[in-house]
Length: 104
Image 1: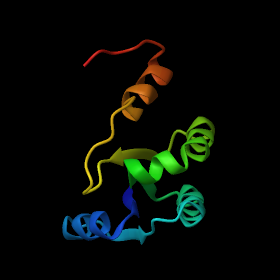
Image 2: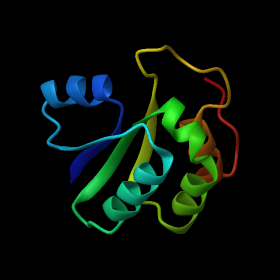
Image 3: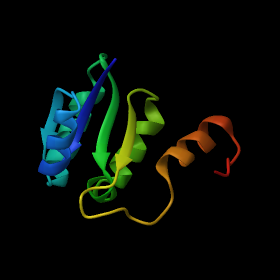
Image 4: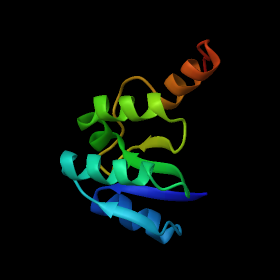
């Protein structure tokens, strides 16, 4: 399966250097929603990486997508502006899948 990235210019550039070829640069929430919706329709995409800042702007949209389809997985990473504080989306996915909260 392939990895896709939706995010700001710096995030895209860094992940392109790491070998990710499916990238989409945006800071606009409507553009991000459209591209993520398109990526969910591609069976070869197994993982979508986005920045925490962009994900916070489209949180309800992402929640609806991940509730209806387990793949692709969406992972949020800090942008160059730093890490946000709040609930870890990966732990939330694990809790929903397993049914219990895992403390790390």
